[in-house]
Amino acid sequence: MEHLGVMLTILGAALAAGFAGAGSAIGVGIAGESGAGVMTEDPGKFGLVLLLQALPGTQGIYGLLIAFFAMLKAGLIGGEPTMAITWLNGLGVLFACLPIAIAGYFSGIAQGKTSASCIQMIAKRPEETGKAVILPAMVETYAVLALLVSILLLNGIS
Image (cartoon, one colour):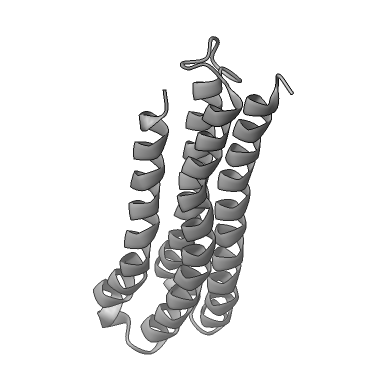
C-alpha cells in the first residue's frame, strides 16, 4: 500500500505514452497507406507525402513528454521526487496524464485520416500543398491543447 502513489504515477505515464503513441501509430499508418498509393504514380511527391504522413506522429511525442514529466515528478528518473508520492498525489498524476492520453489517441487517428485525404489532394493538385498541410494542422490544435492541460495539471500537483 505504501507504493500505491508510485504505481498510480506509473499507470498515468504509461497511459499517456501508450494511448498517444497508439493514436500516432494508427494515424501515421493511415497516412502511409494513402501515401504509398500516391508515390506509385508519382515518386517525386515523396517529400510532400512524408511531411503529411509525419504530422500524426506528434501526438506520440506529446504523450512521451508527459510520461517523462510524470516520472520526473515521482523521482522514477532523474533522482529525487519533486513531491511526496502519496496515493492522492499519484492519483492526481494519473488524472493529469489523461488529457493527452485521450486526446492524443483520438486526434492522432483523426489527423491520420485528414492527412490521408490531403495526400490524395496533392496527388491531383500539387499547387494546393499549403492548404493540404493546414487541414491536418487544425486537428493538431486539440492535441496541443491537451498537452498544455496535462502540463498545467502536473505542475499544479505538490
